[in-house]
Image (cartoon, rainbow, N blue to C red; front, side, top):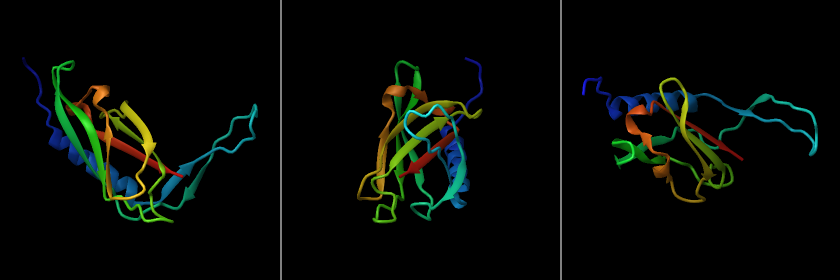
Length: 143
């Protein structure tokens, strides 16, 4: 097989830089508030307070995926989470997306952050995402 070898290490470095840039500045929230049953469409942007000031750490678990014939990301582990209430990120809704170098979403998961502890795993085994394709992690915590 002739081809270019890509390593997960380079992708993880890109993910780390991307998250550091995203979490270093203000958090922007996008929301639309419309009455139920409204036939209007609206959107806007506003700065909202972040639930923590320090960046998250992101690591991946990988395993051999027979369906892909190669290694796939099986879980994304987020650590460095501040769950201290009332201002922390514990118990908030999250959305995490793995994207390729073009920004196309490879897998997306939603859930609720834990109420205690500083880390949690997001299982994506069933998504069959080739580890070498992951270039970015996009994380949104709201609520």
